[in-house]
Amino acid sequence: MPQVTFEYEDRPSLICEVREGESVLDAALDNGVPGIIGQCGGAATCLTCHCYVLRHEGNLPAIEALEAEVLEYVYDRRPRSRLACQLPLRDGLRSVVVRPAARQI
Image (tube, rainbow, N blue to C red; front, side):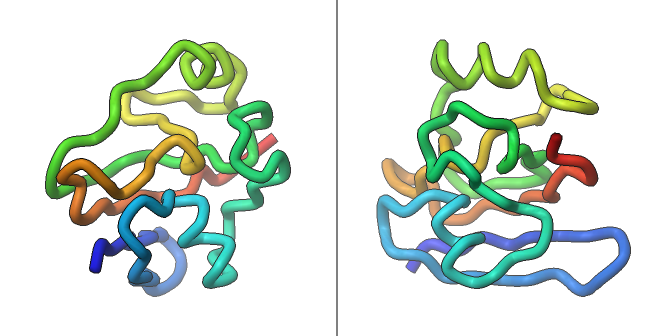
């Protein structure tokens, strides 16, 4: 089963298993992960699932136009900034380690 690890600076990491095709956002919402809100429900129209990809095993999906546009508005954007709703675990992406952004809005 694919796996998502949520790392924090101030608390223990959370490891969540997800079904093939589910997103990092799905893992966060299904497991009550702190720091990921997902207010738009995965439509990539808000900033509330902003996270930083620290490591991954397999291929990350490319950033598509809508995600790139939304990422222009996130607070503290970094080179590894992504929207958790746009990171499905499929097509060879077996695991990903992310850190939720300290500030979502």
